[in-house]
Image 1 (tube, rainbow, N blue to C red):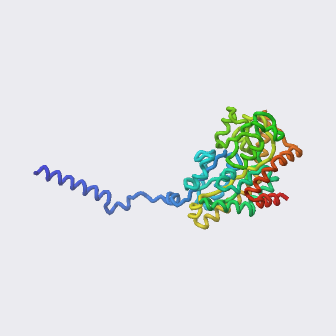
Image 2 (image 1 turned 180 degrees about the vertical axis):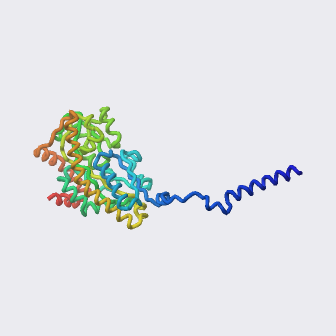
Amino acid sequence: MKTFISTFILIFIFFMFVFFIGFGPNNDSKSIPFDHEQEGLNKQIVINFSHVVAENTPKGQAAERFAKLVAEKTNGKVKVEVFPNGVLYAEGEEVNALIRGEIQMIAPAYSNMTELLPEWLILDLPYIFKDDEHVKAVLNGEIGDSLLGELKKHNIKGIAFWSNGFKQMTSNRGPLRAPADFLGQRFRIMPSKALEDQFRELGVKTNAMPFNQVYRNLEGGYLDGGENTISNIYSKRFYKVQKYMTISNHGYLGYSVMMNQEFWDSLPKDIQKKISEAMDETTDWLYTESQKINDQQLNLIKTTSDIQIHVLSDKERENWIDFFQPLYEEYGEKYGKRWINEIQKLSN
């Protein structure tokens, strides 16, 4: 009995000791200092921005510039985390990830949006755009605003169209000077019915594989060629596994920059305003910068590789335009000639 009482007394003394040490009146003076920096971090808004191209491309550089401008304009309250090269989501995954709210921001090629928005297919018609100024007038004007507005019904906030540049043709099978030169080849394309139909007219077998799989399939001979901008041909080293390139400027590669709609709606109005300002500045900068990057990298391809480059003559270009004219009739019937006519009017 004495042993039991002694044990009980010892346990009681131990708990009283712990109480006064851990919870006694002197505890406040010895508490861990409050971390005001951490409080700021907890309130920081983070926007995860996923894209599938390299950092040294027009889109890659624009994403970094946008992130920097947002940080400056919001005094660090908003942080844009950029994830390039498809490290978060591959080309065919990012749109659904955005809709589900797993990522806040993406900038897919507008060709990748045509399954959701078939009216966007007209942007992929060959030679729909005359030059860079024509692209800017269309995508930075009322037509672009209308197209971006269509995204809202899919829980997407359309923010801007970004520029990459005109697309060129590459192949391992021979020079591509006339439509007949394409017959029987296998090309990688982006997932767009308009692109599929364009190459169908040329007699090409198409494969809409993800962008990050293209190099090894060109190298291994599964693909004969493809279409892309100079910046993508250079940054992904396609020119090292292709023998021929034609400067055709037949199509335009642009990006639709977008956010998850619910995420955008959750942002304070002043933050939305700052983000929009940063986006407008980045978009204006990119139209000039994308041309510069493509010109510089074309010179690098010319001086560092053996790829044979052919520039379409005016007559060859007219032959290509005439060859694709039936597509304009087909798409005018399917999606309305108004859009095509409005775009063509802005080329004057």
